[in-house]
Length: 148
Image 1 (cartoon, rainbow, N blue to C red):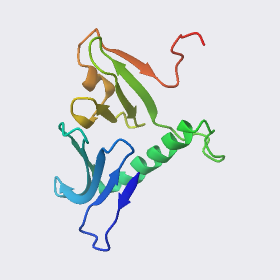
Image 2 (image 1 turned 90 degrees about the vertical axis):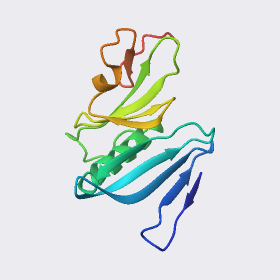
Image 3 (image 1 turned 45 degrees about the horizontal axis):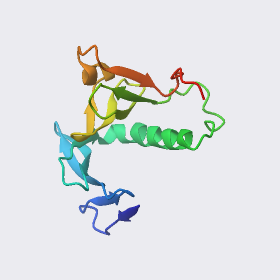
């Protein structure tokens, strides 16, 4: 994992993961409001995607990322967070297609890693699945029904 920072606030921050995929974070504007642009560049050269987070929504996004990271290590939420709503992780499975992993925030909005498009945003999980009855949604906090 590599972060590339600059002293110039206008320059993007680049994060490269262990697979060589890159996340580019830079200031932008959307609908006349300050925002943060999150763009992906896949190491395999396939298409990436962009999500624009309004500046006043970045704290919620960062908190959700921290909670997700904490849960990925098997830890419990820190004390004092009783009553806080957490983002929910999910996997969309569609026969004949790679799985799509994502997270749904308490607002209902979704960020997901589309194997064909990279990072995508949606207003809900249903917006990703559409009316396709072949797509199954598996939530991380629900039993998958598999025997260990």
